[in-house]
Image (cartoon, rainbow, N blue to C red):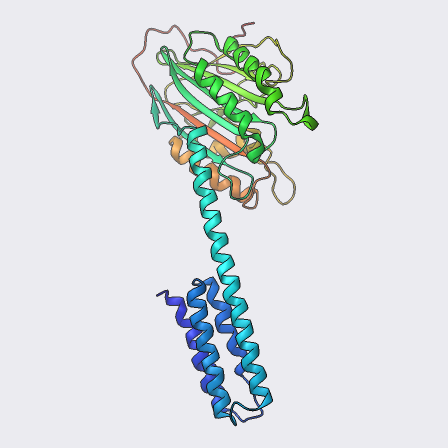
Length: 368
């Protein structure tokens, strides 16, 4: 039995005893309805019905003590309490059914999330990985943001993207993009060509997923990242996606200068650019979607991600995700206006081939 159930029982006892000790002109019996009204927040409909029956029995006892049950006042009080108790029991039953439905929705959503976005491993090659997904829609676990990581020849390839829209309406396009990435990422083609493959996949299937009223308005931003196992660099191709943050020990945060092409699905046949940056052991690459930096506080100010993560550059990927999640939700008042996803990629020290010099962290090597 839940300890808080003692509260409605105690209320019934106290109200009954006090009413029986007061003059006939004072009526405390109607306050008995408080007991069954409190119970649904503690227990289910059956327990609520038991508490309602106890309250009704107490009301009858009060009536017998104060001149019998035949008086009009006591009859009205008993009938009123009985009706209100029945209504509270019905409310409790509906509430329990609603909670069961929500629990089922959560279970299905979690299963769909695991099918759509496979959980990222904690370690891939030289990378320690942690991820965070916050859906904007109530009771949803997935939406229009997406990410994936896979091994390729001699390295790791990562995708993070954002399909236009949020919630369930964007899941089909997110699934399409993830499927195309997983099918093609292992192929020995440059990232720029991989972006073109994703563009072609979006173009082939957009008509099937696009509502008639949104013809030509469906697109997705994407950031493709390739991290070789043995070279301290990261290669990126951006399709209209926000640039990542490079976190280095000592509270240093760098924003790589990318040369993004338009989002996928906007212009077919777009030439994509490959940018290369330094990514040394001990560094952390933080990928994110625009739902993070566009989260607003009560005064309408955007979330200052770059400024905030300077505090946590020396933390592990898991700790970094924990700090960002707590800080982001506090900034947004506990609820985001758009889906948000983040991935932290921490490069550990590995044996590698000779590498002559450090690739500048703020200057990209541009390849058409």
